[in-house]
Image (cartoon, rainbow, N blue to C red; front, side):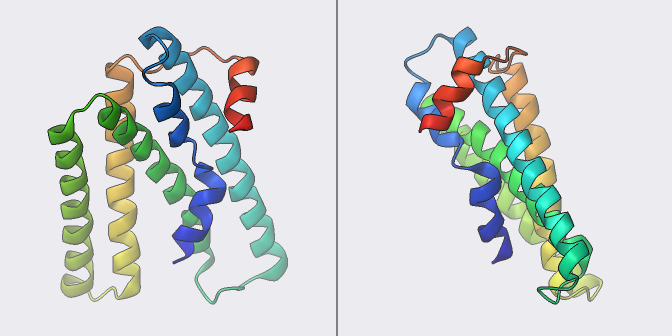
Length: 168
């Protein structure tokens, strides 16, 4: 439930910008656009992470969860957003099989790790959270690799692009 709370603040629906621009921009411009999306994701993640860190220092155990799990929430949200970037590109490329394969593999890994930790190691709810974390980490790394190898990332930072993204 708490991951659903942090994702809009970290991800800010940035992936919707990919669909808006994907067929309008040439690939090199789309790569520049993606770079700016990643930069905005980094800043929104940093803001949420720091805000939650200060909140924990001031208010302590606000949700009755271990503090480290509260701080994992924005990290998982950022990783899930990176995965959504990749899935959005695949959707716009009409690569349904690859899209579905990634979604299926993500679910299978998430479920497998969760069941192993809950049933095999009696970790309870933390086993579920760890399963989600492992799957998010694995598929965000895979997403970064696929986006970069696919030519949809460059190191171009452009204030005009950032302003345009923020207007949506």
